[in-house]
Image (cartoon, rainbow, N blue to C red; front, side):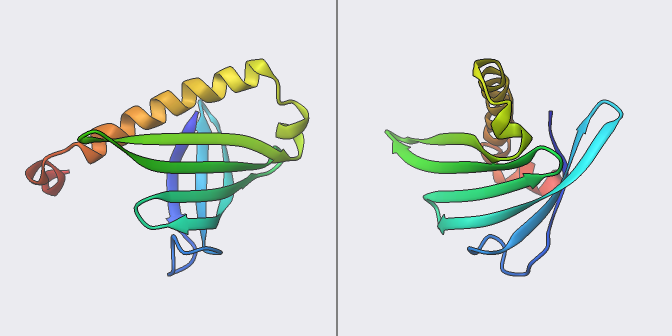
Length: 121
């Protein structure tokens, strides 16, 4: 499960307070949500609050850390309110970890492209 479409709702994205609309698809099921930037330090941190009805809200924190000649991306996500928080348990945490691995692998593929590959994408 992951986002299939996203669109900034504010010209200032990703400034604090700006929003992004996204669509999540799982098979034939789809739902739209809104994510709001709560904190941002360019090139270092991005903290988001994602809202997807009827599941509630979640805090998503992304941090970039130097790691030798590489960059380590830390992703931390926790439910805040609603059904997601009520049903949060070790099984849902394991599913989140699998989703994060997939998301971070896609991100790595994107950012590791050579400049000539990006222009063809």
